Image (cartoon, rainbow, N blue to C red; front, top):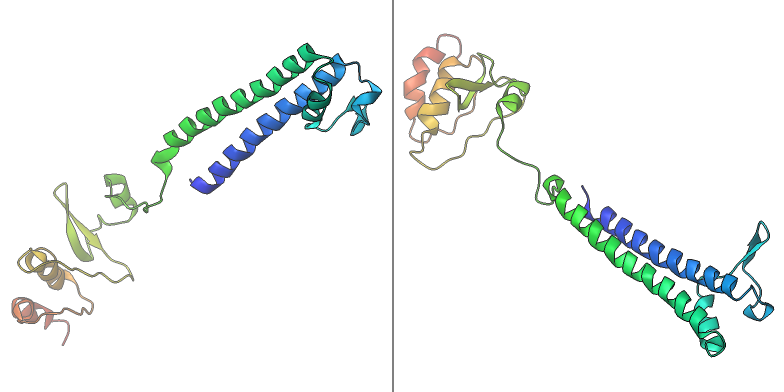
Length: 195
């Protein structure tokens, strides 16, 4: 979910509600005043009904308020009601947007694999580079991708991953073995099929 698109959509909806409300108030006021000529020329006619620009309400209110105070008070209430409706809509959309946060991937979508993910990745096969253990079953990878194990000294990467892989992996491998421990443990077996 991209936050920017939703936010722009929220802004457009709020402005749309306000404009529709003000336009409705303008049309209601024009109808209440009997579409008098003094209101000015309409923006356009549709099926014989004149439509005015949405902001004309405020022009008329300024000029003719003394002559039809109740009409303009009602028109103003309709326009301000649309503002309140827009605020309620904005709050509602903000609540809806905050509930979508479970899908947000702002900081990435990485997570620990589940059993389904492990099977889907093909890590339960009996051959390949040792990666670890899950539910008593070895996780192994046999593919063209490289595998890099990086962990502190004495953390178990040698006995848990490197040595088992070297004793079962028939293909070439590059191991950074400064003390030569892995070579001493596995060179005899690997010499049978490789040099």
